[in-house]
Image (cartoon, rainbow over all chains, first blue to last red; front, side, top):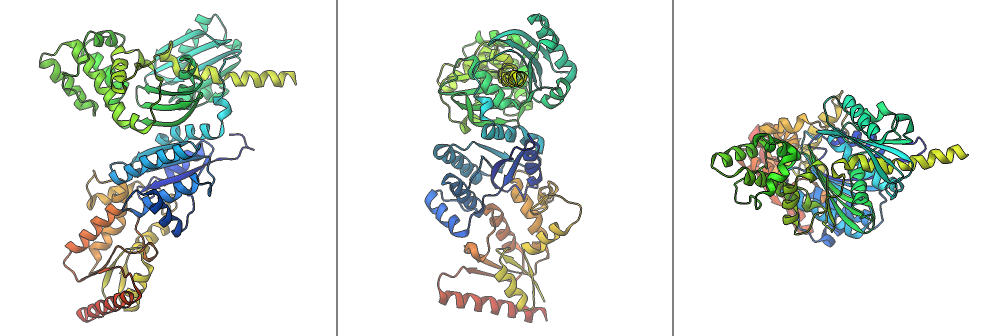
Length: 422
Length: 149
């Protein structure tokens, strides 16, 4: 954050955060991304009135307070750049309130909102990406407004499973690099070398660089990147750019190696989003394990799963990666075909994402699937069936974060040229 | 003098009444004060850390939300010390407000389970009911005094 820039003010509407002992984690995650959390102040009569107006009969006074706080912001009595709604994991009453408040805020205001359920183990690092995305959407909309790539720029996505690099010049992809993530910096250097070689360029030809993904801070510092940005906004920007859906609504689904993201986008700017990362059974990691168990390369899992009608007849529950793997073993032992088991694994992951993530964003077409898992056709088919829509998978979907980074960092080429002219 | 758990635990009025009649009120003020005054922590506003919900496992299982367990780490030890309890049903927010309904249910259950003198009253809706309400609390506390002599 620029020293003169005002911090992004994020209203905290939570129930149980202080008693779960995670208040300090929320505050420090916000500070890391240049944001400041605050409790919207309301008086007793506001709570009584808001609770009656809202019409949701809840018993917990802290949830009644949450309703009053949300109403005060929506009605403009309290100003906020973004809203963070959170409650205890496994609390049904709070989950209902959280979901309804999120919907109420989205329908009645333009303030970006993120909702989350926590437990006492929720750390600042878990919250960081969400709050960073919320801050970016709230205060750095200009970054998100870019629709055309200019100059020669590079995006590096240091993900949990793989590291990707994209080099773009004048709105075209001219270099790509992809490697499994091992040593974070070495993997980044390797993919950059691959992309530079393909583009027939030297690193000095790159005019601006952006990094994203789990290793973004380390790699960004190493490369002296112009922009270090979380993957929620970068991926959604890359997705609508590649799918040619920069105008109007779109929904972006990214089933990653370690977590899943569902982002609803309007005119190229992300609005509400969810990011799940508690259970590996709903991530690309489960599909990697499936491929290993079926003795095929992950790139062959897609074609194999398409040999089946969908695998819905195979008992499979990947809610937990351990039990999911047990289901795999049981299904093979019961004599199900490998193709059916592959398709069942895809169906199970799609189902987890549908149940855990997609209930929290408003699904609007086109639905765009990105990330390496989007190349597994069985997963795309399963998601499409679940959402009853044709899912769009753009070209270079597996490089989405790197593409978004290369696109957004174009803004720095403009700035550098202007400062040269001055 | 008896140790009297007050519910709602945040009620200053109840706390004051108990103290006036010579007993020790057990409520939020005690446990939160202890947290806030413990040096070395830096987790404002109430200085609770992720260890507190773990301590709460003594009173609520792991599948119970962390906020309930965190609260139980504050109130559980006080219930164990309590020699009597005053429970006010459906109190007005201004009388004393405890944020989580699930914690409140568990807490009231624990107080009812414990073999000790207990006064349960409905929060008064009229002035007349208010007078009777205070008189009943006064009598309960006086009777406690006799039992403890």
